[in-house]
Image 1 (tube, helix red, strand yellow):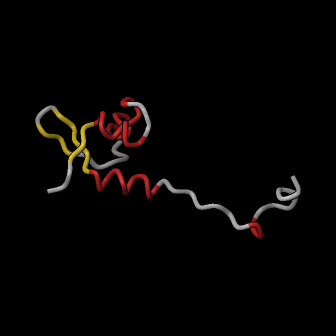
Image 2 (image 1 turned 180 degrees about the horizontal axis):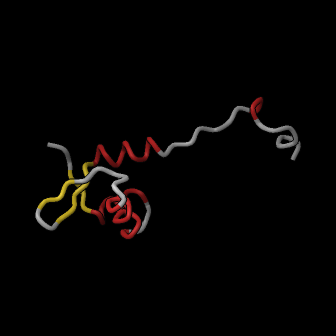
Length: 70
């Protein structure tokens, strides 16, 4: 069975507010489980959410000219 985290636990894990995590749930931007009145989020889904939000850096050759001169 996957480790299920509370909204508060996810907020601590992401370093965000509980309100932000609740908005992610409301907007269906992160998968969740509804157990009775409780919302639980699998640890694997938190990891997948973070991985999907990753932004790669640009290589120096793809930067606009003048950026490196600063």
